[in-house]
Length: 144
Picture (cartoon, rainbow, N blue to C red):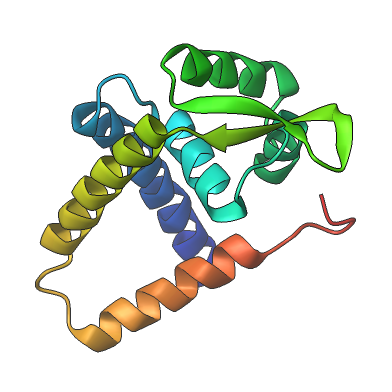
C-alpha cells in the first residue's frame, strides 16, 4: 500500500513539474516553447540531425516535429544542410541566432533551478539528480 501511495505522489508531482516547466518556458522566451527548446538543445548536443531522428529520440509524432521544425526555420533558429555523406538527406543545424537564444534560455532556466534549489543540501541535490537520471534512463521492454 505504501508503494502505491508513493507512485501516486510521484505521478501527481511529475505532472505538476511538467505543467510548471511548460509555463516557465513561455515566460523565459515567449516565442520558444518547451518542445522547441528541447529540440534546439538536442541539435546543439548532437551537432545536427534529421527531423526523423528528433521524432524517434523524443517519441514524438513526425507531424509534431515537422511543425516545430518549420516554426524554428521560419524564426531562423535552425537551418537545413545536405548531409555530406548522403546528399538525399537534409540535416538540421542551429543557426547563430539559434545558438544565442538557446544559450540565453539555458542560462535563465539554470538560474531558476538554482534559485528554487538554493536551500537544498548538496547530498539531497545529488540524490535527486541521480533519481531523475535513473528514471529517465529506463526503457520499456522492446526498447521503444
